[in-house]
Length: 349
Image (cartoon, rainbow, N blue to C red; front, side):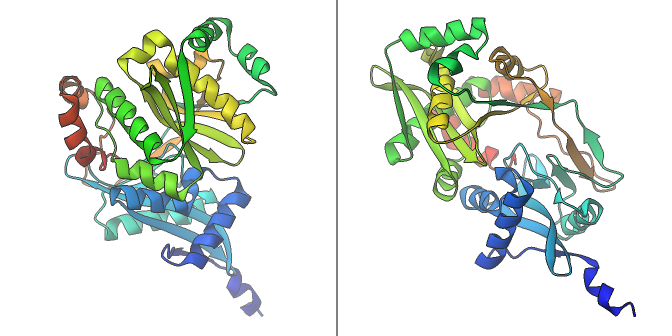
């Protein structure tokens, strides 16, 4: 009499991301659930192609129907240790759909099999016993205005004045995904993160994201020299400026301010409705910069699990442990930083 209900039992299994039909099924589920770009198998596979960190994922099914999904990147680093991240090199992720407790338990089991003593989930529900923080980072999302002038007027007065200075400067704007765009972006971005004391990501990661997802590069140049550039992601009606920066010259030219404003206009022309300024650490310079643009911070929920007998993973660039290394990195010659940076950053996750 109970037999007809046996098929409705919840089951958890490892997704086969090498099977196109499986990937398509999960992509469809992510879209229906309103998941982020970082929930998509395409993101996991781009990260794997660009960094070598393996893509995994757990699916929850009931009666053969997909009801839950947990994307996972297996990130390993000789400096920062091993971790399963949801999702790798992302600001969002975590359990999508239902069965959070079972998916979290499955992730712990998979972590044990892969010798990963830590798991980091960037959003989503978790089961009891996980360390959950809601005070470390915030997200910033706002609606795009209906027209160019309305978009400018939507920016608070002080920040709008900076944008106007950038509009008056002799700056050229280019948007694309070709080799010239990629080279200009990497040169600017690499210099920008070196100045912040952070190892640059491998150029292959940017290439994989551009090739496998909806993304493009907007670059600002002065006298033919790129001074600010951003690689942006497009997903579900929103644009997210994800990897961006500027050279020392960009500040005086207000090139970064011009860049983000031009991206708002470009995104609206592409049909986007929202501008997702990404996440920033609470109280940081980037946090206040985004507030100056009129964005309201929304606390993000991040969860972590550490296997018994292991110390929590510390890959936070703002931690006291890494401050000396950051100070030293800022002083490295740019060619040297660009040579060794990708070897370190591919393990940040």
